[in-house]
Length: 312
Image (tube, helix red, strand yellow):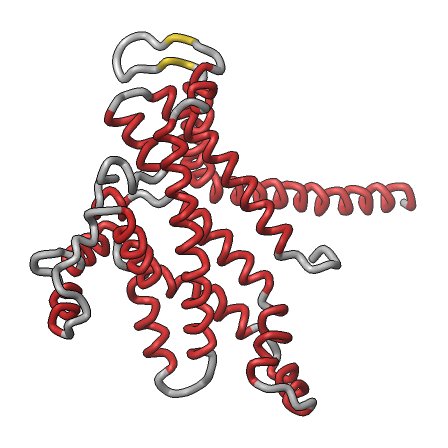
């Protein structure tokens, strides 16, 4: 009897273990099924094109006909491509203008609406509203505002005698660059505002109350409390702004078409022209990967600069 009872106990112990293993496998399988569609989409529309584009950068790859392996020739030709380097320099100037402007305007807006007043939600929505407008629609709207014949900007500048004759804002790089930079700041500052606002709301009010007790002014609180504690949010907003500025394309395509004489051609616009206007897909792929390396270097540099001494 004692032996039979022990066998029954062992069988009764093994059955729940088998059931738990089956439930665990079923649980894991259900998780895989949930992520499988997103995984397949990434593999088809990101991973495969990424690998294919990298392979194409080593070929002379016309839109029609046979492709020819040429090794590093596309990358070596980049060293002699004056248009590529001029477009890269123009993109750098645009990034150096837009990135600080987005941060400053977004930071000021975040400070203004970081309170519990009744109208705060309304102003948050108003400041964020330009972000949801498509880039092409926004570019067309501002192109009308900047028009030298019937644009609102020239109309009011002439009306108040600020200028003597209409300015062709999109006619030269010296005026189109600041004009488009202003448009982008108006459109995207709300996005930076949201990132910084989330960081501001994570700072405890007790920190500010302690600073007030010690006699710190509002400016000192911002300088020595707000900005240091906002480092992660500031770093994120700057990385996103730099990447977005380097990849600028639609606004210049719509508003200036890269002219005059390619003076407002960004590096992405040049890649687009090379690949889909002149049908040199291999060379366009090589430029794409050079741009990717530049973005990775700047992003890593920014993240390291925003770290505190403890490495957080």
